[in-house]
Length: 127
Image 1: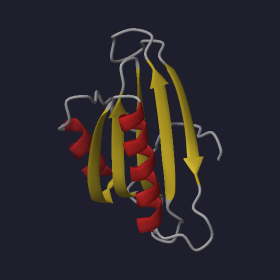
Image 2 (image 1 turned 135 degrees about the vertical axis):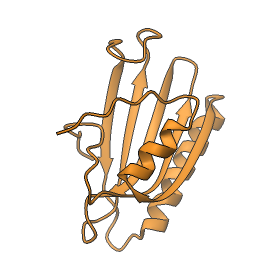
Image 3 (image 1 turned 120 degrees about the horizontal axis):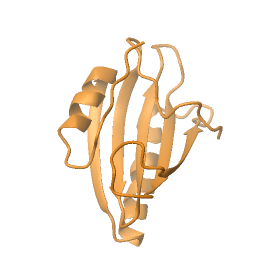
């Protein structure tokens, strides 16, 4: 696992399989299985956040993120199954609420799906 420079940079070539959000009492976890282009390996990104305040942006929340590389020969379906097991176990053990978003599309589909959820505040930055 390596720490990402940003949570997730979506480009025209980003492909997203599945995303999960686990809401806990004073923290949350967002996981996304994605790849940057058609020939790149699928990766699972995990971002945990501990709330510092109830502000959506610039709140001082403590965030930690990791990229999880697949094992040799591991398929996207196997990586998605691992992500689902991890998020389900976390929500169950810590009495949280779990959302699963099967995207099977690009970054724009991920943003559109997240914007429809009751928990996500999204700030889109153009480059």
